[in-house]
Image 1 (cartoon, rainbow, N blue to C red):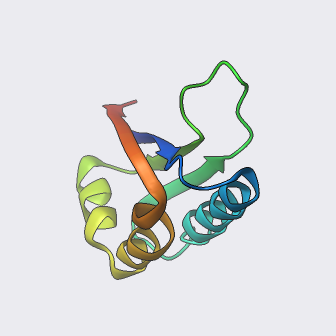
Image 2 (image 1 turned 90 degrees about the vertical axis):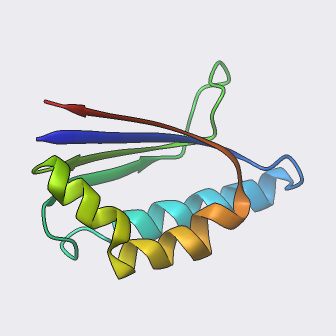
Length: 100
């Protein structure tokens, strides 16, 4: 099993209402990939972070293998979500992948 964790910071140009809209879009889009991508075991997006956080939202996903994670990264459904709901709005992205 492989964990794939991402923390994003939303661009500062957006006000709080727009940031909340972006978070909801990312959450719905990424969590909507469940059942669509081979080897994706679990996917959750955390949008409610404490003020001590330096990120705005976090993806916590689990894959059957590193190969399944690689397949996810190029899967058309994931690419569509990433290109339309994530990348246009993010100022930064940090990623940690590790084997369980």
